[in-house]
Length: 391
Image 1 (cartoon, rainbow, N blue to C red):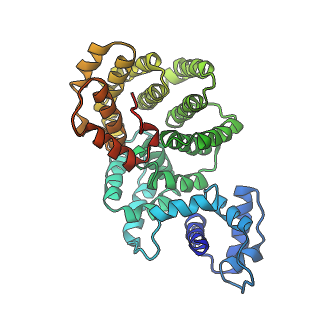
Image 2 (spheres, rainbow, N blue to C red; image 1 turned 180 degrees about the vertical axis):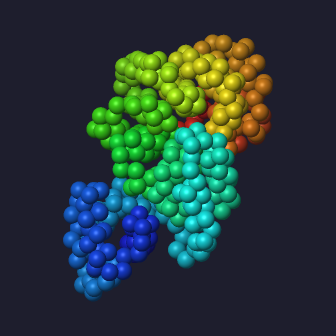
Image 3 (cartoon, helix red, strand yellow; image 1 turned 60 degrees about the horizontal axis):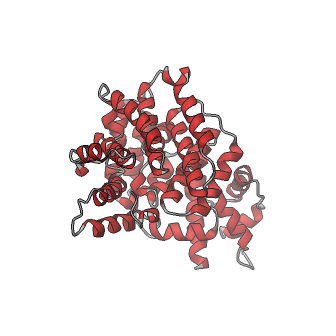
């Protein structure tokens, strides 16, 4: 197992550092970069021994492996071993030319604005291609994270919920390594907290929440990131049972502020409303969710953009759940009857399938295979929090 961990770490360092470690100069530069990122010092001679540039009398220490793991975006060597069992397969052949072509589309094609429809369409087709060729995902994400458009479109606007416990969640470390800003850290930590909440890992939810709180982030109207920040606060309160009223008030004040309501890209406001509504429902604040959902529905009717970033069916399901939980059962049934599960948004299809089947059970639409399907989706996504019925 130790040799497998060392092999996985070497592979990850090449991806994060951007090139193979083949010289003493590489080790000096890597040593400096490790310190800049982790605040832990590894002597360049230690790195030379680790990469076999000089003879090593002893294997690398556990502390060395831990520091290298943290540089790669993992919390420990156990994390890197667990993840690489699913996303890294030594000896796999990667069609490099195809990957570089795909990444060049992100890097060289100018985007007019954050809601550029050309780029939104490009990302949709790229993700669908990666679903069909999962062996390409790790390398693609390590490369696309180096591009501004890759960070903004592939990672921030298309949070691939169905793959949070797989390649997308793993790829956040590449994003975090490249976008070294407060916004970048808040986004990556908030989405990681979301993943751990869905997976039922409250201890990891707390760990990410502590990192977010230390950042002392002030939402700045990059609504793709701000909505993830508020989602993290809401789910942290839910997981720990801490008071949430202050967060709800702060969320409303931010949303209703002149700067947000007058946002130059109102498509971002729609995205914010959808994501926040979902988080409010997950954390049990159904009446608050209905307010933001109402705003999103009104906006959606007049916007072509909406079809690129979510599905009307997703919004309908959230509304049906909110109605059911607030006692509006007839409304919930009426909405539920119009939902087409096959049209749930493609990167949250399984996730919304879990919520749909849970609501179906509550509405007494039980089918002999509903529970079996529900448990299969939970297993496929890793969202252990939903092992018990969600609604």
